[in-house]
Length: 206
Image (cartoon, rainbow, N blue to C red; front, side):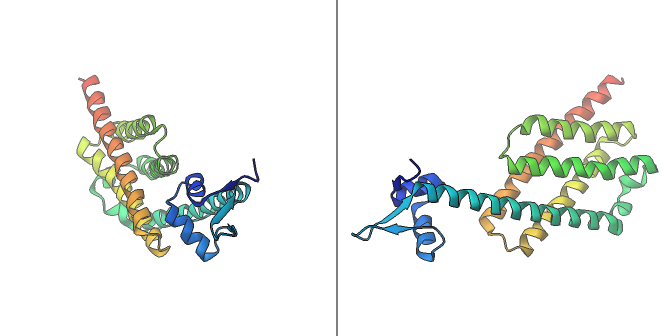
């Protein structure tokens, strides 16, 4: 089975790309290719599988590197005093401020997990993060408006950092647009959860 010969279209199906992409990779010498006496391209199943695994590992390493750059950028933006300029942040004591800075981590990890897993468990994840932001705001006596402002501060800081890292890495615009679409979809669900939770907490105290 590992020595099965594949046509160009078969190789494209295995790799999950358009046949023209396989043809381009073959012409550039990127993909291991063989030709029949008639000049037709053929691909060994075993070689295609190994190539795909290697490409996936390289992609994972590159993605991890980029995410580390995003983390550095977020930390730098927060440490530059942007938080101190936020009206809602000025209302908090030192303990509350520390808790909000830590909340950026849960948002980051939840968002990156959502992007990496194509939305698996997105509903429970977005609910949990929204609940965390709402309950923290309610506990520290912030209004629901300030609760939303706090969340949007961290959401926008994170997205700005991703934009910067993607731009510096020259990530293709198509991939960038897809990633940002996922980020906004996920964070919108968090915001909805935040508002529902805050409303529920308010009603419980009446």
